[in-house]
Length: 112
Length: 113
Image 1 (spheres, each protein chain N blue to C red):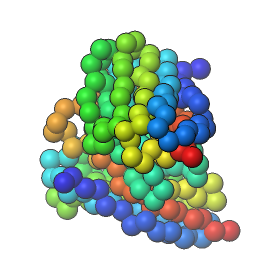
Image 2 (image 1 turned 135 degrees about the vertical axis):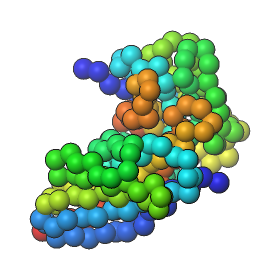
Image 3 (image 1 turned 90 degrees about the vertical axis):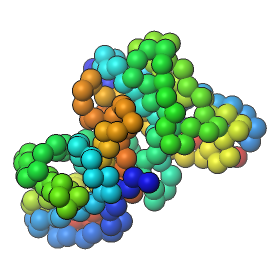
């Protein structure tokens, strides 16, 4: 079945560690996105990529990094520079020409 | 600062009633509008998109857009307990390139038996 797969679903990290969240899609969508959601808040855009080997910062990119080496994959690294990384991270993709986001199941990161 | 405003709720309606969810946005040039449903602990799922003024119906859901008033709403007819969720309004500001949706904080809907 077509969809977006995020892993891991739950992740615990010690302060000072980098972690990488995986996002893979088989929908053949060109554009992919990473959002962060905190309790009681809306989704905030971290990074997005419209084509392979190209990506742009969103509203809250500081402390995060991404790569887009393949159309299907858009991993997000949460670095130790991110001051408050505990959050629900959502990967999404869109078909060309629309703004209709399709989301993965999310990854919940907790910093201990 | 582009903003999307929603009443956080909770909005409580009895089963079978019409639920009305509202959203206002600040960027007048916005062209695309979306409603997502998010169950607790889950990821959002798209339920409606609307691009032009007026109403758009899909089953029990109706999206209404008024660009002059910068207002978009979602009506849910014959509300069911399974409709209990948080509803996120999202707006595509168009400017800046890409489909960079701006989300509201969501309205929690509770459908009571």
